[in-house]
Amino acid sequence: MTPAQSPVPISDALHRKDQPALEIDSKQSDATNKQNYKGFVAGMFSGVAKLSVGHPFDTIKVRLQTSKDAHFSGPLDCTLQTVRKEGVRGFYKGATPPLVGWMVMDSVMLGSLTLYRRLLLENVFSKPNIRAWSLFSNKTPDLQTLPSFGHGIAGIMAGTTVSFIAAPVEHIKARLQVQYAATKSQRMYSGPIDCVEKIYRAHGIRGIYRGLGATILFRSFFFFWWSSYDILTRFMKQNTSMSTPAINFWAGGISAQAFWLTSYPSDVVKQRLMTDPMGGTLNDGQRQFRGWKDAALAVWRERGWKGYWRGFVPCFLRAFPANAIALVAFEGVMRTLP
Image (cartoon, rainbow, N blue to C red; front, side, top):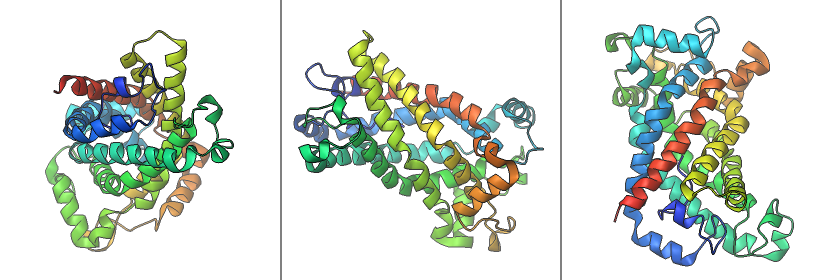
């Protein structure tokens, strides 16, 4: 996830000496409207960088989340089996949907988050009586600056918005990732387009969007991502001599890990729901879960509380480098484009 700032170089927009981090600025918004193409192009490069670094970790995570205990003994065993049976390409199964969808997802996330931040500042957090009781606002007493709590609320709203794009992308990705056969002829789906076509013929648009509710729940934890990103950015700016790119790198990576520490159990449930057999004319098995509650209960019955953290290690290892590098790529392209 690229930082939720409008397409102005984040290193410039978030850390100007004359304004607090992530402050909403009308002139900045005007400049943004004139340079939307930069965010579009930079978001594409960010998505490619993140996927290149993070997708192998994600594949191991999804396989551990959805497999039986006897299949893999742990992350290392899953990695070794994947290499031995499928080669390095096995780590990139299901990579096409997020690669294609990330450009759109980033655009929606960046745009909606910027809009929600502005609306929250103008209509909610600029009012002293509301500002007085909002969390973390004492760190940013300026009524023209959105507090960290406001960034978290905007994150929830933007997470809900982008879920309508992310749900089908992640659904198709997950089903491709749990195909263990080394050759395409032995797999149910030959690729993302074939997967979409088969699910749509059998279950319609509702089948494509299976797991939407679980996706919205999972992305509600964006509150912790964007609020912690704002807190860390402010702290590092005030207490270190690091450069702006370095601050963005470390704040982005650490806040991504904070997000996964709080959201991971909901991701396990989401993945179980998205990889559950669809049934019907698809002939992929009998459906087990009607919704995310059924999937959550199944995880508890099978493995107890540990089940909600299965596959956490590769996910946590992925969170920092994937998001930090995505941010570096985003900012580099933003600075390069005319």
